[in-house]
Image (cartoon, rainbow, N blue to C red; front, side):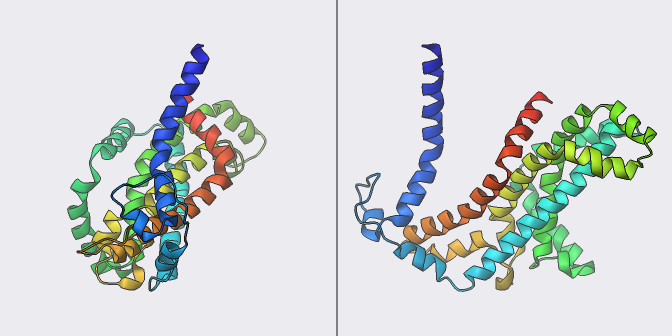
Length: 277
């Protein structure tokens, strides 16, 4: 009985969480008159692809899509690389201000994103004066900002995975003639791979779904806009095209789902390891 109650509670929570996603996909297939109906129903007897057609025919849709892919993948790659090295250094080495640095990583995560948007805007403008590729209206500015927000959580999470690897393993590898670099990439890196996958998923989702930073930093360079900004085309003063918005949002979830499918096995073990850590 207790097990049934627990499973029923979990199913209810899952249904509540999944309902917005269900409604988004349903609205993407609904005809326009059913979407704007005063009495909406959770089904449709006249599914249509008109909303997807309008979403896909937006000018430069393919370019927006590629920009989002580039930003998300670069952020994932750099966050994995930097967070792995940083977590290893914070775990394996003892140095001055180590504890202060760890506390700062926690404090950074407590600051609301909205509070940092304006300072980051001026910072990116200043950076652009020296390095144009990382300034305003360039994808590099989005990469830097997303990386800055992804790294603190990724480093803190990976500390537990690195600490779980016995020091004796490194000593044994050293006795066998392995250099520190070889141990790092051929022994330690595969062992903490589940944690890297878990952090990469969060970094990918954060960069892929971002609208605030993309809207703030990509001001006039239309060719460098990302996919979330393309949905603005359907937001109109008189009446929003909700069908196209839902269709575009549905298309945006496909790369995330593909990413999840590719890493799901390691993701589960990575999250489990994070809980244990």
